[in-house]
View (spheres, rainbow, N blue to C red):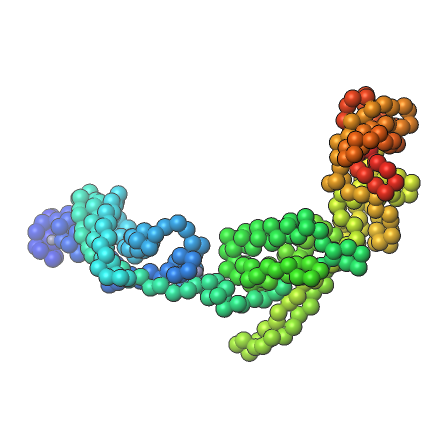
Length: 345
Ligand SMILES: [Zn+2]
Ligand SMILES: [Zn+2]
């Protein structure tokens, strides 16, 4: 028995006929208006109550994307092709003209719609906090009683701080920003949007440069009945730095790194690894630093001694010859000048 469409009365296989199904199905639905919230400072777009990372797209491209995102297509609409043209109708208003082609249960369809898009410009969380001088923590880098931070350490710390703040931000932490970085008497202050970032940064500096970390917190107020603190993370650099050449237990070593309270050292001759405790690190004689090495030409040699040309005043000078060093007159060696003459590396 042939069924009959209960909507139009024409013959059908079952239920509604194909024409009535198409007419009743809502193939495309969309809101009355689309709002696009964009940060006027950094260009970040708010989506689902979260600020996205800004990209290079223009406001127009963002409005275009928001209109496409707002469309809700019937799940049986196959191979939908969406064509959208955007028309500016006001300072912050656009009209999106949309044409959708596709097929529905084997029949090709074409639908048109128009969606007003409104742009709302405001400052995002991050930008408003940055403008408001907001901060949660300060990392203070300082030298010690016998030496201040070197300019090399200063430069490396600034770069590391910037890299860590950037990668935290790109990893999704909106408070990962540097409010201010300033050289102060005795070191560097890095003022940060988040305490988490401050702690990570301070630990990275201690791993790299050694020294001690001291964290203190100060109560600055209340927010939603919870206490709000600001932390200060003081990193005091140790006496020794990487590359320092020290004379320890009768051998020459260079400082290779730091591990907690221990200073890791490596012997100049054999590369033998060892470590020094805190007490020795405070007292061991520092002869020079590998970073200051110069190239010097060998004039002559015997089993014990090399005669080299002082690379700065071109006078002949003597240096102890490392036993296993194969070198001929006329060739160059790397030397470090110390108070007691040259050390051959
Ligand atoms: Zn029908
Ligand atoms: Zn912003």
